[in-house]
Image (cartoon, rainbow, N blue to C red; front, side, top):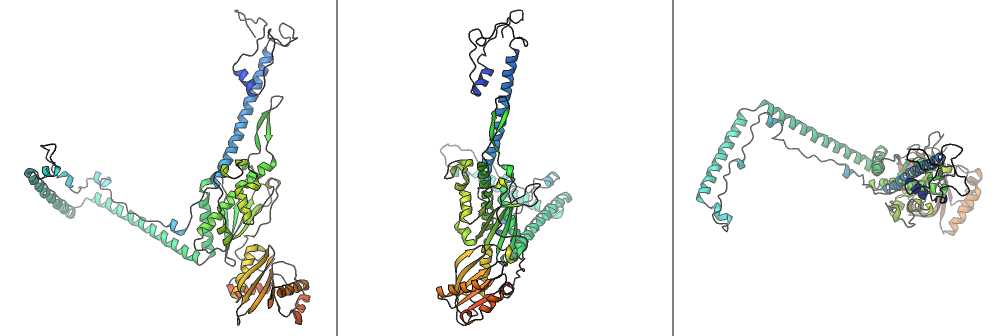
Length: 546
């Protein structure tokens, strides 16, 4: 709109000039329409607009459009900041953690010297004479090329040096006499306070190290409280790099199977942005652009996989005396308003599997093989690949509230058979039978419900000869068909005896079958027998199954 010299509109409308509004159009990808040489759209009547002052409606629309574009841009920047925080969390969650062993926790006492120039000096303490205050100045050089040693041989300098030494020794004797005969009460009080403070510091360090040694002794004896305390301190120290993302982890140690069960609290689902940004709608409204659900789920799984690997690495690194035979880790999502937590991830790994697996992925997401950074496919993510190498069960859709079955329950230190993981049950069966005399243990098949293994005991032992062992922890009864299957396996393995072990019970038909001539070499152990073996050979209880 153009105006005359007297401030009145002359009715002419001008096209937008290069400047702020033109830059807004360019940012939005819109080119201004050509209004023709007259400044009006083609076919528009000349003269003022009937709806109001000429040009006011058009300027207001352009300004509103600019405000909407600025708001859209601001909201998109906010979403991008959330995505950058997620990328940084992924990087920091993969950083290595310091081993939290006993040696690293020992404290050392270093005495602090008494400050002679401190408050006591200000109170009037008589300082000890220093040689620097008595030493004579070196004679100046008569010849610039003369060696320093020749200047020091000057007779006058040597006489002055001898006299200075006598004066310094006399001053020292007098100072010591004064210190002996009469002490300043203020100075004495400061010295006494300093000595008492140092004694208290030394005593605190000594008592702490003694308590640490007691914890080490209890840990080496596999006392549950000591093992759990050490594990939880190591797990807490592992969170150093992600203190802005709390992921507490609790530990339960089971002496029966020498296994630590870790319960890891996973971050809330909203830690991963649900949007990619905002776009400007046709009516000028800022419209959210949602992320594909699969991409969002993949990013969340990438994060929790790193947290799980970090916890496993901390537990493995702190166990320097190899007390643990295995580790079970369950990742729990605890959302407000949910009746029960949801298990999204579960790992059941023995010590050998942990030793074979590199437990930390690359710290930089950009270094991963897929090269897609934070938007990598979950199936190609390095952390998830390593978890699956450990046999982990991972939720396919955390945002759909799809969970997995925990490998083991950490409800009690004294577990029942259903609380044990597959590795724990296999470890328990092996420990019971090897202590009973069965050696050369070899696992042929293993699954969540049990295992099939072979072993051989020396002549004269409780379990002599070659055996085929079939152990299961199912709650249902074991019938005749399974006894016949075990007898066939004994023949195929050229073994002498078979052992059918269950945490449940046997049917009457199965018990009668083992009394017949063709199946007398098959021996049976039910749930009560397993618990009795645990008390006899391990000295530890196994709770009755539920």
